Amino acid sequence: MRDTTCSKADVAGEWAYTETGTVIPATGAVPFAAVARYTLDAKGDLSGTATSSSDGNLANVTLKGTGTVNADCTGTLTVGVYASGTLVRTATFSIVYVDKAREGRAIVTSLVLASGATVPAVLTANAKKLFPELPHER
Image (tube, rainbow, N blue to C red; front, side, top):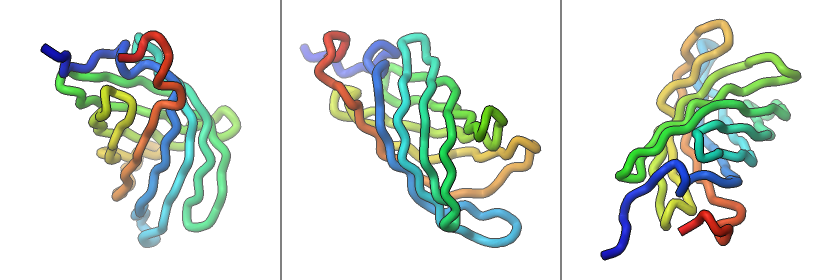
């Protein structure tokens, strides 16, 4: 019988993702897009870098956070976004891992600014492992 469950070890590795959608601050909806590379280890610690565009304004940021995974291949990523070492926002993603945990599909379920203000957003992300052939992969 084939294994159809996921674990932290399965999703651990180096990932790349694109994120697109709309952020809706009090001043009105603006388009958002990002491309990122991050590492998620078997303990659930996440770190990486991203380049984003919010209403055409580019930013290079660092990412620090945590990830969880359930046996049914669903999970959560909580990612702090930092500019020059200062927290800008925290995004929480609901993610589903597919293709033997080599890819992920996600939606942002919470976007909170460093001030504590929640910002409505409609953002989705597609992630793919950079090196799925490593020995710890299925």
